Length: 296
Image (cartoon, rainbow, N blue to C red; front, top):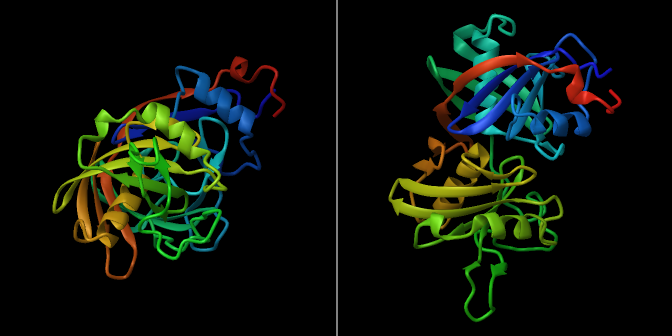
């Protein structure tokens, strides 16, 4: 039987991004790709990202997080999910540990992430520094300027989309800036084609963004390993960084996604801060039947 059978989880969302939080501290249990896919396939635990909390690895941190997409692949960062973990570790009766001033330091395979409570259901996450060099994102070939890279969708003389910005926020992002409503593009068709494009050796999150004001952006995202999503925190961060580098906005903006709004600031110290809400939908336990036929 899978060691995940009968384990408790929280079902949450951050600006519409469906999140499941699972606490495995005090155990040596690791979620397999097959188990993550099984959890995502169940209506009671369906997620965009599964946030698994493990014991700290680096001294002085509060927990180590592993982040799973619906296809079982792992991600290095998830801002909306990190806010949900912050709430769980501060407020959930079964998960909470004492924390000073509502602040936590969490760790992922992409590095350390600081989380701080702003209001009862609002948190700010320090997403760290964006990675802008082609080999850090990474891209499959050199681009001296990643503010625009050579990539297009459609006929060469009349492309539907072209010249995206490339940024990593712990995971790769390609952002297409457009002058009309992002909803008018068939991202459900375009997204999977570009996610796996050879230019992205680790695949990529694909975004379509419209700058609607000096400090406002409308954004839609196809998320690597998850598909169309109501919100993606790292995409919002990457989009603000990319738009600022192109001098389309300043260094802060409110980003409107289908699931809600996030406030993003690219500080002078190069760190990107994301502030947004968390919502607790409920809790549950994983049925043993969910993992039938899967070796734990």
